[in-house]
Image (cartoon, rainbow, N blue to C red; front, side, top):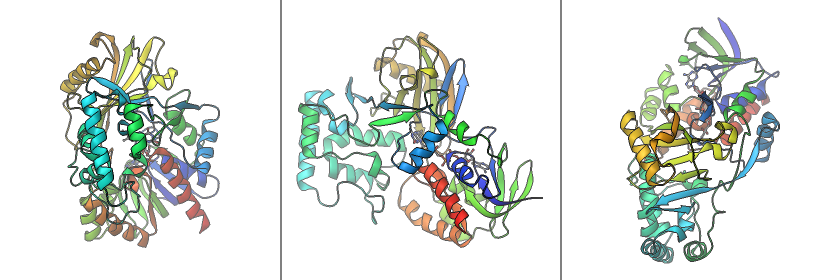
Length: 438
Ligand SMILES: Cc1cc2nc3c(=O)[nH]c(=O)nc-3n(C[C@H](O)[C@H](O)[C@H](O)COP(=O)(O)OP(=O)(O)OC[C@H]3O[C@@H](n4cnc5c(N)ncnc54)[C@H](O)[C@@H]3O)c2cc1C
């Protein structure tokens, strides 16, 4: 029977970062069910292309985590100025839509600007959202109150309905803070009738490995980790007894636990979780994202990624990864990632593929299907966790119980939130620091 001081479930960025900080200081074991480390921050090679699980760009905000990530990557990192766009009404306009209406037809522009000014003059309550807001509004109401009817109708509502696959009258807004920029009236008017405001938003400049895709970061973090074990899935756990049943391995006894696997799955495996905790966890919802990666020859666009609010396009976002790292595609080719969300239903991939090709032709990114030389579907079963009243009620119940068992649940899915890679790294480092302090 194996004994460890710290069991880490999951070798994504959160688990790997925690392990790096524990290495040489405390005995630990990472149990990762896949045969490779990295979780969603992984890169798959096929036919001379490197494909990520959709665009995975480093949006770095905090000095300590930035230093940790840059050190892990060594010199293998480039800083890149964002070229993100929106395609609507047969035109491209820079992201974010609300601050760059200039590319839209006159009728749409004036509906958006007048709707915004009306909403701005009538608006009561905070316009920007804080993550700690006690009683969050629902998205459909918030967007109309803050952006007005035009911007909501042409972008915010259709785009977010496509992405979240959940009724926007029930989606709450705690996630919006870093992700949805809220410009003032001057920026809206300037963006519609004058100079574009491309510099708005959380990701105006991003970092990305020069070689190897985002998987290069996970590979670097996993290097020389003595406690990393691949192909081992935690099937059952008992926090009270401090024991986990690991498939193909048997029981592992631990003193402390860091979970980074999806919270709802973790609770379902926790045999000592009280009924109230199980019930709370069963109320958590998420969407599923299918990523169609394409290797394409003869592409002219320099764009990094584009947002597609209109129903004609089955995807909510499409990006050209080789435009932020040439090494991802062979010479003369580009590597595309196309993201399609479902509420969890299986996707009919053959019809989706036909609709994707039609969409890429309609917006001018490709001329014909004959340009496609490679393809790879990747599925992200739990992609975006749903923010709703049920989540807000369930998380305190679950985390109070985990606290009573001295277990930590961190990362994008362990903490059940909409966060970036850097936040998973930060939480991994903080979890390790907390365990080392005791
Ligand atoms: C479509 C999409 C696009 C994104 N784009 C960006 C972006 O551009 N920039 C950015 O910063 N972030 C982006 N993210 C977010 C980013 O992927 C995550 O924040 C980060 O990779 C999460 O790391 P993690 O370690 O918390 O979780 P994960 O990567 O999910 O790692 C959890 C690990 O646990 C393992 N596991 C699960 N269950 C078990 C079990 N029972 N036993 C053992 N192992 C288990 C899994 O295999 C996985 O390896 C994006 C996410 C999505 C869905």
